Length: 478
Image 1 (cartoon, one colour):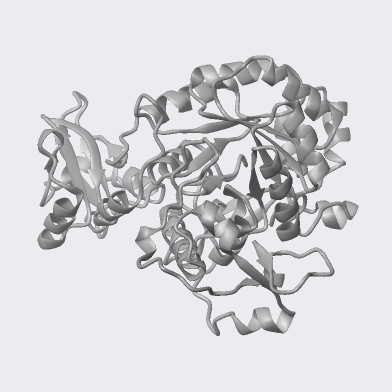
Image 2: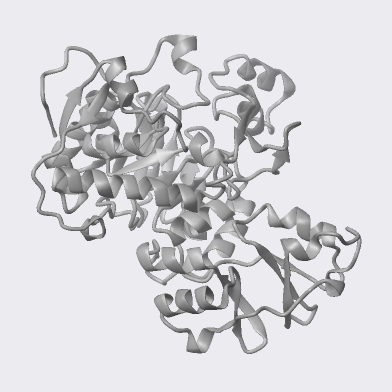
């Protein structure tokens, strides 16, 4: 990457823009956006290890579309084991259906439909036999305590897992039949569902799969307690990427934690952070990190910069840290501060192998937490920062009351915030479509066929606040 003019100050994403260059890339679909950091991701996007962002549905969906989801460090190991077994058992193409029984109520169906980007739930009898489907419209105008069995219907189209057509043919069949939901059966057993959007995406995205063909997943560990023991357990349970995480990564406790993890000789990439300087990168790499997480204070839920004045504008932090990591044969993830697809493209141009997203993904149907409606009927989920008093209380629940109260005083994050779902893009899959489309287009403007070429060919200019505003649409759709 090179600058049009040498900057005289540190920069964040809004301060810069990409300059188009001569390109021989014919199609946006000709560019390869796979991460080149040995994590196995086929798109350069990571769902952050935040309690309000990443749970099993987020991990599953991200991996099916080629990305990574990192389970938070405060999830108990026994829960991690259960989630890992569940995620590894999901199909790489067929989506996991919402299931109800004939004896359940219409109210049960209505509560479930908001948890997936699906227009229906599948009805499965107690013996496991597929019985039918229930759509949103089937639940309208009937008593909410009516049984599912009284409103279920047979789907207009089903697929056989043993004789599944091509994804293109499956899409055409659903389009011709005018259906938005098709169960996939093996015998009388329901093994998954397919939607037109799912078929289209599976033809465009390659899933992130492990050596056994299971969906990839990541998990985080903090720098306190039995770091080595938890790290070993996470990998044993199925974590394909390990993240050693703390807000201030350039400290001795992090170096000690990395040394303990490195001594295990684990067969997975180890990510560590967060830092914002080349010196921090070099020390974490020396301690055993394969990938460095970059970012202090740019997150939407983070108050670190306002509380402490500590941090660094994210574009310059990524640029500096990526150069240091590249000299050592390592990589960086840009963590935080992205609000638009352009920000992701700029982080990749600055040298990141992947971009970690938190709050942007919190307001989706796949994130953990209940879907709530405000007084105007707008749907949202609650989000909170991982350095907030709420998160600290969750992580320190085994400590005595005095210790917990004292640590909660040092919060550097927002404890509650409403993350509204975009009615046009309620699913993280919708956001992945938008983000990857933007990144692909950015690469074609730069004439880059892959991320390595993008880093080399990108030309970046510095702009005024007025220049940034000039590029914003009058009515934003995201």
